[in-house]
Length: 337
Image (cartoon, rainbow, N blue to C red):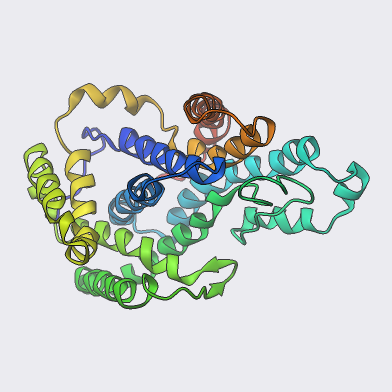
């Protein structure tokens, strides 16, 4: 089985930041109330598929490199929770008081503040009293947080399935197949939400399919086929079959992760500049409240300036999040003896 060496080059920092931008770009049309085509409205979804594809591969690799439950979950927690805690606290005590239409005394006395704080425990809530209540997407402070409990649930499953040891590659493959079938037969078809712990179960299967596709490619050593050439061929093939929408929807479940990982491990050395820092997570968790704030202050802002200003402000928060929260916390990651 292939194990990545510590110093092996990859371009996943760039791809993750690009994926975060896709989510930002797709949300821009929805949050600004602008008319979006089918293609632009699907970009935020594609961004999530990229995130989960990479995560499935790298998290599976991480377990193999250090199969310790304690160290595994400490590493996962340090990557997600510190930055999440900061963005939630800033939303409650800075963004909320600035943008709420409720009297501040009433705002701080509201039980919804403690409910919003539960986001730090991955029990997702979007509402703060009187905040963004007249936006195009009303009462939603940070709609991007819903994917975090899904991501962490996948981490738990990785640890559980890893106990099968010699049979892990078959367990992961079957999990991918089951998730893909449930996605095609149910999750993509039904309009009815099934909410568990504040999370729509349909989305667990939809994005989870890409996670397990990435994990399958790791455990079955598909890495030997990753290259820039196979990336180009796969992209051309995916573009060609787009005219057959049902075939495309099924094939994309495996092809998108393959394209993402092929490009990630390709020899595009000019992208190595992005390896110095990973701003993608900060960009992802700050983009939505920044976009909502801009559209609240400037409801008639042209889309071009909405995108430019939103990108610059979100990037500033992402840089601060990495250098002052995420990177310092990574120093506490336990190391294998």
